[in-house]
Image (cartoon, rainbow, N blue to C red; front, side):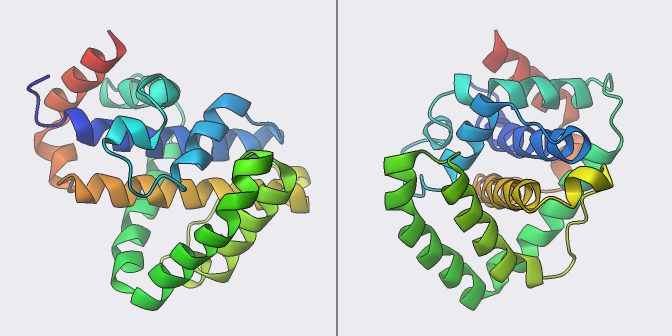
Length: 203
């Protein structure tokens, strides 16, 4: 695949997949298990050999590719999702400059990884630990990512923990996107090429 956006769109798809689930949980209290698992698994794959391996495979991030395709093709209807994505991309810029926070997150993930390996990344105990790590570290940075949704669900500790855990995965994808050369100019100058790259991955 020769499109220079090929790897970058996988990272953006990871971001879109995570935030799509955040939106779904905030509105309905329910998430899509396989999509959430692929997102959460990615936070433990720091030294993956390729962007696809960060998500297990291209299939692991296919839901995110479909979400990304709908936005790049201007067919999407959830206006809150791109705003959430831009907030996370801005937060990532601050995060990578805060060495103490980066080290705290890295250390925390190392401590949680054995439990995730035994119980699975979507186990309530693991979600709680990941959510707590996000709350103790990244959530203190500005700009804060504000999630809108149904107050009934956003008042439940388990829902809040899952949202925070998935936001951690969203930041991980944002970091990967930058590492692959992504910038805001991609959305201005590369929209068509990104859409073509997404279509190639979904073909």
